[in-house]
Image (tube, rainbow, N blue to C red; front, side, top):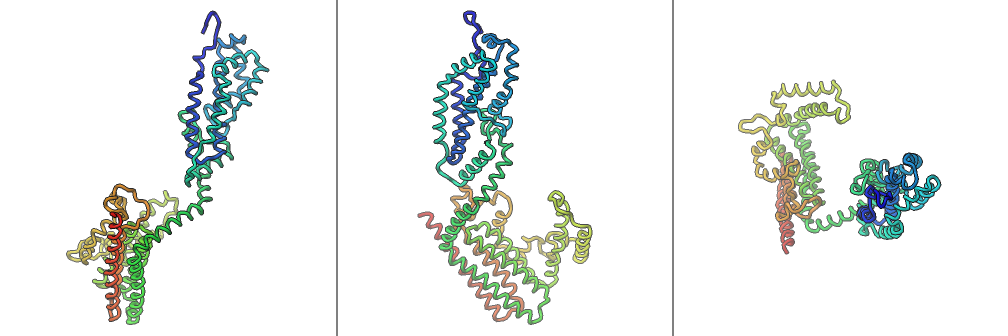
Amino acid sequence: MEENGKILIDFNKLSIMTEKFYAELDELFSQFVEMLNEYDKSEILQNYFFELFESFFYATFIDNFFSNLTPENLEEYGLSIDMRENIKNKYEDVQKDVDSIIHVKDEKKVKKIDVEYYNNFKARLQSDFPKILNLIAQLEKEIDINRSKKYLKEKKEEIKKSGRTDRDLHSKIMTAIIAANIKKNNTFSFGKDMNKLKNGLANKLIPGLAQIYFKSFKDLSKEMLTEQKGYREEFESILYKDWEEPLDLLECLIRVSLDSVDNHRKKVTQKGFREDIKFNTLIRIHARALQISNEALTLLKAGYPNGANARWRSLHELAVISIFLSDNDNIVSQRYLEHESIMRYKEALIYQEQCEKLGYAPHKKETLDKLKERKDYLCNKYGSDYYGDNGWIPNFKGLDRSFRGLEGYIGLDRLRPFYKLSSAHVHGSSRGFHSMGLMDDSQNKILHIGASNYGLADPLQNTAISLMHVTNCLLSFKPDFESLTQMKVIHYFIKEIGKKAVEVQKGIEKRSKE
């Protein structure tokens, strides 16, 4: 551009003018502060980001210098046009340093470009191309270099105020991670330009940061889990104050069930029924029932009614099967026990299909052949329909050979509504979003992820009822006066547990409305 016959620098080709320059710096600085405010106050982070900000300032200025090595400007300062390439070749190292800040091609090669670096660059220019300093002077005038010194000083003071003071665990951990990474690698995740600052090198840094993150969690795990344990114990203590009577009664029932069956088992065995297939099947079912009852009790004490109800679902299935076996001859119990071989064969086939994807060794051919041989033998013994998942259920007239059919056949289908709800907490249907730990007016308003002292009544009662059914099947096998008395005792437990559980739940509902 010419004015009065004199060639001036065409500042339209500069990437930023004075006010725009500082305005964009302010925008970048705001992004730094916003990022720092995501973490705890940290001198390491503050110093790192100020140095980065300062480097961006001088890198941008030096980059403008190289951009303004135009034929017109070179001619203005008495330099030949071919000097443009000479200067760029001479200061290729400087251009790489500048590029590392402005374009972030390799986060490990980001160069610190401060006032000292800039003055050294000017000194080199003065020695190699003294006339070009006139261009530098004009650029400095355009951005008001004196203003920049005050500007950077103010930003340094401002950045010291950044960082969170409400030290939550996540912020604390992340601050430690980032600070450790900066100390080790002198780098942080930043982007190619101001508008994409936060995205920059995330993909490159994620593996390394994830390892530091994991180690930090491990180092802090004791502190974190001790705190969590304290919260849990305090909550469980509060829950127990509400539910003490029904919970203690259920725990007592589990012990009574164990002791009464153990005593009756010894007497029945002495009468010559040690090898009785039905008797032994009922004992094995009862052992599982006791274990599940204890699992449900543990979940109830911890405030997880959904989990307890899901475990009760299995207990109810055992109760239905136990009653059905108890009402039928030994052949039915034999069918039930031997059906395990069918399920094992099916599981083996599924495993064989997926083992390679899992990285596991496949079954040997001999193993599969033995399983298949056993399967074929049983299907030949009981009929081809024995291969079905419910194939062990006899083909009785009027009996639907499904669990629901079995449930109705023995008269326990009255518990079907509870069973259906418990299934929702086992499977992944949207019905499972319903939480027993929330009152009706809170459903769909709260995403329930933790424990609750509400909603224990149903799973508590149901666990007691189903354990009673399984226990009574054994106590009624070759019954005597003592076992019949124990059955009546258990009946009283059931009534009392139900009564107390309902009282507690209604009491909690009443308190919530006060």
